[in-house]
Image (cartoon, rainbow, N blue to C red; front, top):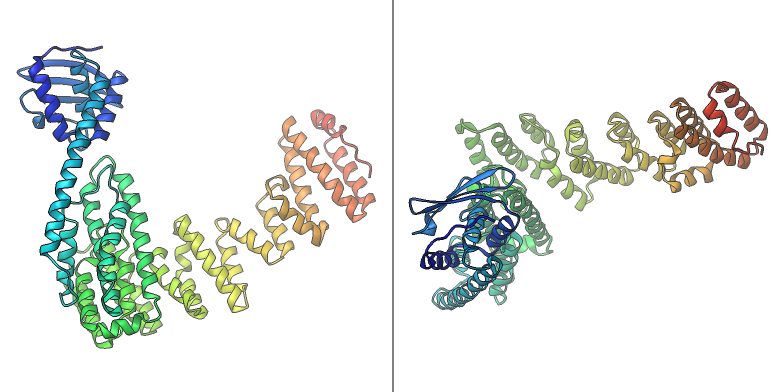
Length: 529
């Protein structure tokens, strides 16, 4: 174990500073590094500790004895990092037990934080008394008030995006319980928009940290939940009435959303969805037309946009043609897209399904068909589900069947499931044959369903699999062939085809007479019906 002696008063000062600047979780990681012997070099040079901490690679750590905040490490973690903490524990081993220091530091930090929280709570309550929320304030003033309520909040190891979203809703939504329904409605929309905007800020702040992948996923999941709640809010029966009654505040809300909703900065938040959702519910044609004109000007004047940003503006512009049910015009605008992403258009598929507009849904699915080959697996699955739903409600599935056939082999599992569901057993067997599926790889329930209709349909499937197993020419595959033969024998018995069975067994025995190992396994079967 590396040991280096420094004056005791210096060690005490470093511990005191660690209480101010270290997070308990970082100390835990640092302790793990120390405990596992990752601190390989520890020297004192010119009043500073110079160390090497070996993890996946070597990290050089520099800690001045006079000032802990002047420390540095070449790793990408937030500072102070776990490697610095490991060096402190290694240094302390000359004075006592590092595991006790870990507990002492954690307890001191927690005590200090409780005190700080108590003081912050007192200050917050004082601020609340001095700053009040009223229904007469502008939307901008509401958002300023939201900011004061959550000033200083940051996404950390302990406080994630979902924690923030929950706290905002629990704190802000009850504030307006006595307001008029239309104002409560507009207010709640803005609470959700505020949550999404702040999450965007937090995401940008955490992108470069070593927890960025975790934060991105948490941000994506939480924002999807908030957007779902926003969508649910617009399903209120009186939503349109409330928007008309509070038109000024609704107009302000749209204005606040505009500047950042269409920037497309590679965010995990689907701002394009939020933008379209709000404008979909707008009740004033003149306001929509003004937005169309502004979008057109923005497309013409913006010369530095990347392809994705151009696509976002294109989709936003087409959105207003979709609202006016101008399908051909919307398609002509969308023909300018650099990339036709299925996920950008699930908004319309959901709307059409919700309102049972099956012809509209079918139009969108036909338009999206070329994108299915390049869609992600999740998007492909959703598109297949929409196709099946359309087939069920339009009374004809011929087009859907043709789509599935054209997308083979990717659509295999959806197609095979659909053929079973619609009891097209001959087509189902043909599909398994073309894909060279063995009955051993199929679900028993699937085989049972075909057997109950016509066991003869399964015979070619078994014949093919038996021959393929034999042609692999190893004992394991011969055993598989014999196992399949026993199952096939039962189908011949059920069908009463004793003569054909004997002919088939004789044929196999003669054809593969030279395969000694196969003949050994083959003779173990009792092949007389």
